[in-house]
Length: 103
Figure 1 (cartoon, rainbow, N blue to C red):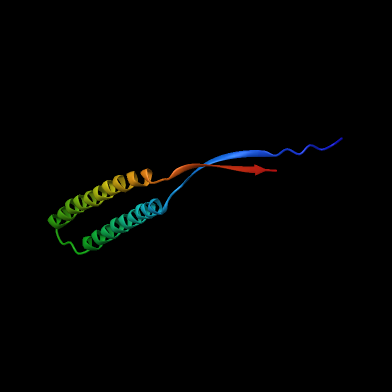
Figure 2 (spheres, rainbow, N blue to C red):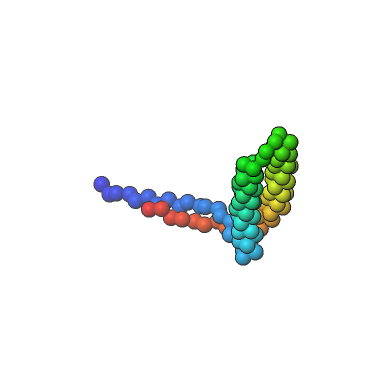
């Protein structure tokens, strides 16, 4: 009996970004890393400040100020992500169909 070899053709759809799209995508990634670093360093500073408090008023003001500051950082992060994320979606490039032959 003769063996029958079967080949399979698989079609894969990919998007290819242009140079501008790659720049926007990297700006989005760098922005998120910077915001995470900013939030972490802010919380570390709050922790360091909490070591030097002497009364309840200072502890309460640190808690309130820390909450407001965290909310500000998270708001900037959210609006920056929405703005840059929209550009990342709009610059994702044309859809390209690639055919791969699998033996």
